[in-house]
Each structure stands twice: as structure tokens, then as C-alpha cells.
Length: 337
Image (cartoon, rainbow, N blue to C red; front, side):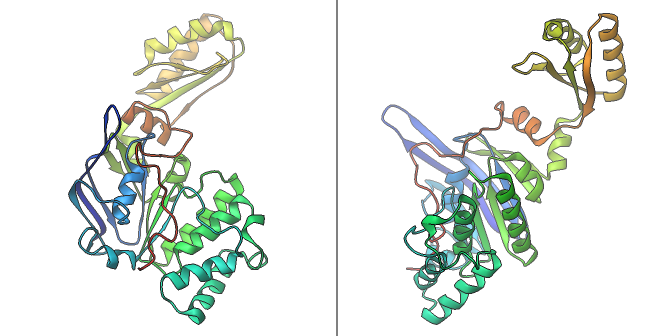
């Protein structure tokens, strides 16, 4: 049974000279105890969808339920069963890590003793024991993200909303945070994740929903989405960029889609239907044309290919900041009031 349900959500923002349809009939279901990833280009509606589901904004129309609770009519109750962490660490730099978590606990009315005990528990869980008594302003980016995520877990939520949780982190910190998220899901937490990193969705998500122009345009596991666009990719690395035009012409004859060439002019790629046999033919024609190669091979489609095929856009290098709605989600958004 889905623990998150959204049906035909619509949200429109009116700018000075145009109208932005941030959500245009978005529907979504997230099974309990799983990770669902939301992927889409900038402005697709990912952050707006999260804000609706976490009761931060009201949709113009449509319905949404979290843990069986209507986000519009039972917003207070929804806030008591969710945690959320936004694109930027929402922490007080002048407080220590421990004091930040205690403050969140008191906002949830845990009481001083219970808030302190939960803070200590989370400091240990996120491997911050040595830094817990230091002001956050001295923390690294990875440590700040961990403290922010810990704050979202103070009430041990049933559902955790993570909006670009590893934005700005180095690869080591990102992988460490992936481990924390996996352990939370293993313990029964449901996670809805928006991310700009396709490998993150591939690594963490049980199911992926691709969003474009405020609607879900495809959904499934990473493998299912890759299978939707089918085929293989032939990739070539040329010795001499001067051969790019000849190589491109040969690839275009045998490909099922456009040939892509990188900025150097030496790396080319094209989708094909029959990988091994087509590669053999292409190599023979390249050899006949006198084109020398550093490397040639076949690869399966990636989520990047899925993203580009379905949305017409490459994966963006920045988070989704929906137009006319720049506020970010923070770990204390769910605090009962």
C-alpha cells in the first residue's frame, strides 16, 4: 500500500509577464519502506512537489496523502510523522551540533531530557561524536549535511523527504551519506528523494519517477527505464580529431539516433539496435576509411541517456529551484506547532 499518494496536483505561479505551471497534473505513489527518486530538469516541479507533500505550500488543485493523512486537511498531523531535509543545511552556525539537534527536539515538544538523549543518539549514528560539542560554523560541508539530516530524524519519522541531499558534497561525503540513507530504509523508513545526480538515483532508488513540465512522464526501476529506450551505445575514441567528420558519417549510417561528439572532437557516440554486429560493421568501415582509433566499444544505456531521451534535456548541474518559489525545505519544517 502506498504511504505517499498524490493525484493530479496542480500549482501555478504568476510572474510579472508570464505564468509558470510548476505542477501540471502530477500523480505519484510511493510504497512503504522504499526509496523513490524524483528526476527532472531544472524547473520541472520536483521541489514544488516536495513542498506540497510536506505541507509547506498548498496546491491549486489535486489531492495528496502521506501516511494516510490528507496534507491539506491534516497538515499538523502530517508534520508529526515526516522529516525533511532541503538543498542547503538548515543549521544554526553558532550552536554546536548537539545543541542544534536538542533545539529541534524541543521544537517537537520532546522535553529537555528526551531531546538531549535523542540528540546524543543521532550524533553517534552520524559519526559526529568528536565534533558534536563544536560550533557548526567550523564543520565541513559534509558534516553540515549530516547534522541537517540528523535533525530531520529527531522524531524518527515514518517518511523522510530529501531534496537534493548531497548537493555540494565531495564524492567521499556523498557515498557516506548514501550509506546512512540505506540504513534508514533498512530500518523501515520510506524516503522520497530528489537529486541532480543520476548515479545517486541509480544507486539508492527502488523506483524512479521522471518529471518534466510539472508531470510524471515515466516511472519504474532504473533497469526498467533503461529498457524503455532500448538498444546499446557504440562509443569511439579517435586518434585524430580531423577524422571526426568521416567517423560521424559512418556512425550516422548505422545508428538509430543522433551522433554525439564531445568538445575535443575525438569522442563520438551513437545509439544502435544491434550492438555487437553493428560495432563489427562500423569498425570494418572505419578501417577501410583509414580512421585510427584509441578505443571502441559498446555500452548499455545509462540514466543520463534515459533523462535526455525522455525530457529532451541533459541532466542539469544545479538543483531544481522552481520559478517563483525559491524557498528551500529545511529539517525543522516538520516541527509541530
